[in-house]
Length: 153
Image (cartoon, rainbow, N blue to C red; front, top):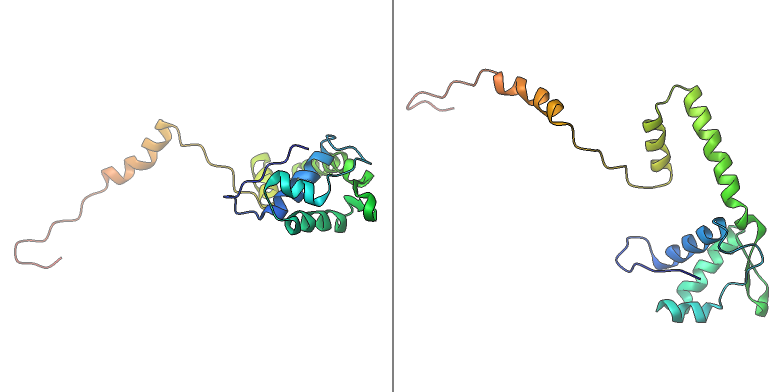
């Protein structure tokens, strides 16, 4: 299983594990019925405490993406494996509804990014001609008169 943890990320390691496993299942890399590595094995592979991995597995189980069968292990559920198709359908519905409401595609994307808790998409720098047109009026505005000698500003 291809999971990596970024210790410098603001997201806690257990959440990185949870999101990584959910993404692998949704992307088809972990089909329904796939047995996840034992908690201690994955913790050792990732250089984390076993409690961190156990918490990620509990969160996945709470969400219905993993089923734990005692000593037999934890397995990816059909719900987790089908999540990508459902997510695609929801995205198509969102796009259609946004269009019906007259929401511009860029604004719809910004709203979706905000709902997902992602950083806003960086804005591209304005073209040179646009930058000049916004700065030109300020350059042509009359300058304030400098105070005469001995006067306070």
